[in-house]
Length: 280
Image (cartoon, rainbow, N blue to C red; front, side):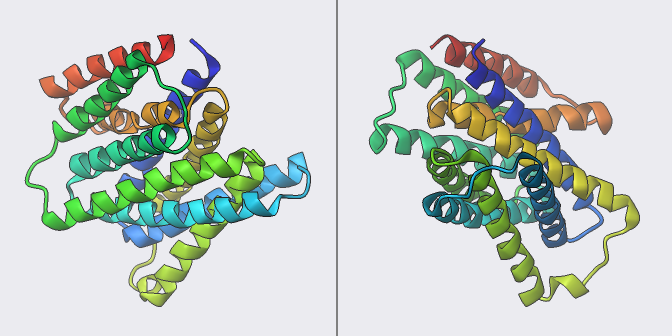
């Protein structure tokens, strides 16, 4: 299996695990605070990496595109956690995953002239179907507001994938730093302006979960960026879009949530999609 596919799967694992941690934290803390804390902690990790690696001075275009990507990504994270806090976790995760796959794929084919074979088209379609099936299998009575938040998250993540891919062509690390810096600024400022910071205090037990969500999100970002260097952005996004399955499996193992037959079918569909994507 080629490195781009493996990195895409690693991105899915990190994103799915991070969402699981953020979802648990959102049970006792406002999702706004969870998102802000995760973004700031993730930025701190990236800054440490930057100091250690000491990359060359950033290019203005990488910073600009990375910051724009971060604005969309930050909005997506806030919408995702807000939707998850309403209880419709399956539907919110599925719609955000589908958008994060569909938007980059369409942009890559229509505007960037990135070739995708018929088998890879089928594989990405299977990946999207698996994410929707796996997440939808546990959804009961989703609210209209949760659906709207999921759609906002889908657009935010889809735009993030496309813009960060372009920024990473100039410099990967600085693109990630600019993206996370813009997201941290956007989410943190929104928390302050909306008065969320005075509403509740994060209990001590929630901070390890918030920190885990932030660090894993950075790892997912990095794995995705490296994946796009080896495979088309639509394929990389398709693999990363499998993250709701990871969240579902963690909930099954750690929280003993039931794994219904449709979810098992989704896992098989996802495996088939991965195979199709990897063999081209």
